[in-house]
Length: 383
Ligand SMILES: Cc1ncc(COP(=O)(O)O)c(C=O)c1O
Image 1 (cartoon, rainbow, N blue to C red):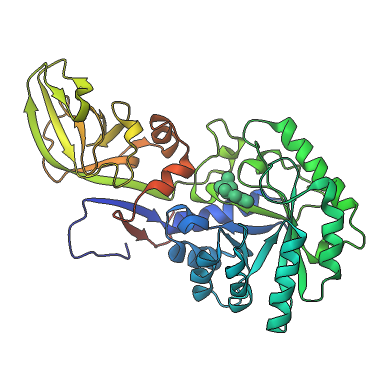
Image 2: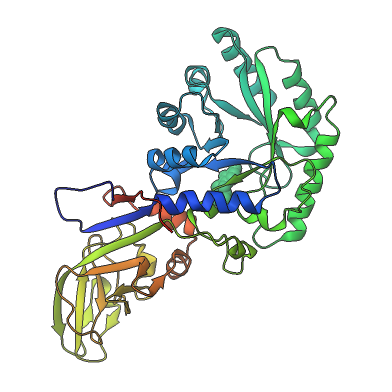
């Protein structure tokens, strides 16, 4: 571990950077050769910590980094001068100048953005790189595919804007292959309409983690993928074919027992009295609550691992504590480790399972682990 905090940890995340590196290599090996790897590291690298994650992914050979906004991009730029960075979200007008200051590529969805970035490039004396985004059915960012040729022409005609990539984003790659195929078709049709297009000089990308499931081996025009969740060892849905890639979970979420006590049958537990003990019970109070990232929706539903055994959450998750039933365990003591998701001995709770208990998805679970939670980095390359 790289971090050795002076105070004992009450709630922490263990982040296995060696697993992250292995994951990137496994994903790469599963892709058609020559496919470039865009590492999606927005939202503090999905809560894993931007600096540590990006440094390791640079070492592992990512080709380009995608972040949400210029603040994230500026933090990443400090780490990797010269490394290509794509900003995925639209910029506010006051943010435009940071494209030149930090040498960033912007996402373009509109003619107005081209004009703004042209002005930035002219003032800086060099062209601003952009990735043209095409809306093929997501209904969010991008120019609508049927109108994309005009925007492509405008970019090509601009003197201080340089086309560096073209991309789209899938709306339902995890559960709607027919719609995903239609989005691919619209994207390819749009590209075929672009006069003078040379795909070899551009990043052409559509696939996020779930998209990879339906990417055909020939992949035609596509020459890059944008991978977020899968590089962290998490499948985009439980039945995903990507299980065959054998990535490993990078992030585990851990806390400790702060108090053990007994309560008589019939007692109610936690705020709102939503749980009544049906037997004389031993309960453990964990040193983590919703302020750390255990969603309140997991109240009365989640389990945690203590001593390698599953212990159900009793009553409502509170801000700083969560109560679990340890009646069936021998020798639970103050200070024992409790795993919210991750491995403990031979037992495991996956983030997917944890997220289901909280009526959410792994992406949101990771983004909800708060800054109160220390991140401990495991760096050594092992097996
Ligand atoms: C535009 C875009 N591309 C790629 C990704 C990565 O997706 P995933 O984490 O499913 O791989 C995201 C994630 O939200 C995204 O917004």
